Length: 171
Image 1 (cartoon, rainbow, N blue to C red):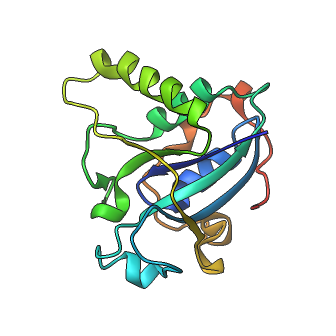
Image 2: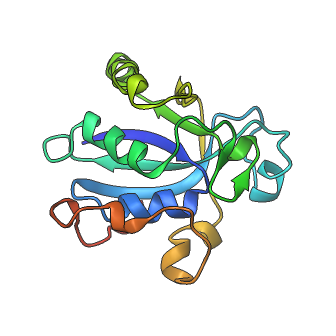
């Protein structure tokens, strides 16, 4: 089992999308890599904490290798937009890949390098070691399951049938 934290705009859609991906074992919405401790959604929204809305993933690398995890992320984001995805804007909505295993860094950087020619604008996805991760409030966990008509910038039809699993529960 491997772990990684991904940011792709609002965490509601990132969590809901990845819960449906075959090989994902657990998901959790939260806040990553800011400068304050024990942060809240209200504080993150000020843009002063440096945190990003993110999704913690546990995955089975035998079913879903890291490169495939990154393929899914790049499928649902525009990696050339800085601090914006869909209708959301602000530093908390930046895109990012936050690794825990140092060995993953080289693979992530190689993946991004391999993608550069696919875009006319520079890729601005943040790649950093995960410094800290705080769970989002319960209200935000599995938000789109609790609120099926809630806002989401992600197109779930991008997930192919052969890639799908029944949604996993939060971690």
